Amino acid sequence: MRIKDILPLIRLLLSSGDIGVSTNAMTTQLLEMTTARAIYFFMLLMLTQPACSQQLNDRTVLGRAYAEKELKFALGGKIQHNIIDNENAIIKDSVTAISIAEPILFSIYGKDNITRQRPYEIYFIDKYWVISGTLLENSVGGTFLIIVDARNSKIVK
Image 1: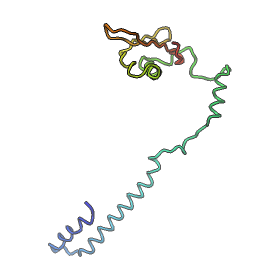
Image 2: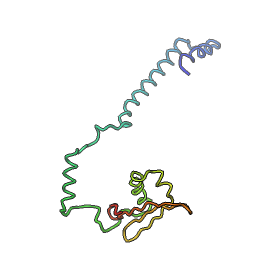
Image 3: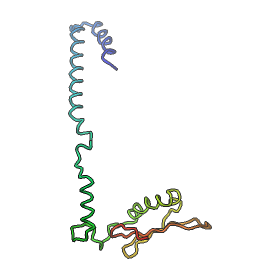
Image 4: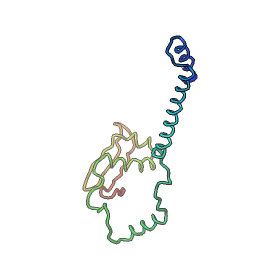
């Protein structure tokens, strides 16, 4: 409800009894209070707006040249600090292994074809995830097979 809708009701109430306050003074006071609240609200809104938005301008972008330099350094064979040591598994569970394998399989065989082969057979053997699809009984055809190195996410097969 807007103030314009309420003002006739206030005038009616004030005129029906002897309250001792003029309707013009009451109306003016109400409008001043409403205006003050509106100004306060919009000031608060303007102050909090930058905190709610995120723009590319507030991000540091290193660029393609930096990415190329880092790639050459990583492939250069020099000893470097790296969290992937190729000894310990970084893919520790079957859910993560499937989340790595599925997008690759979807792009090769199609999402519908791969999801029809659920539930998957998945085994962790000698730091490798061996994942294959299953067929319904009495079905003809084959299933996918993908082998993922748990130490570095490399697709072996």
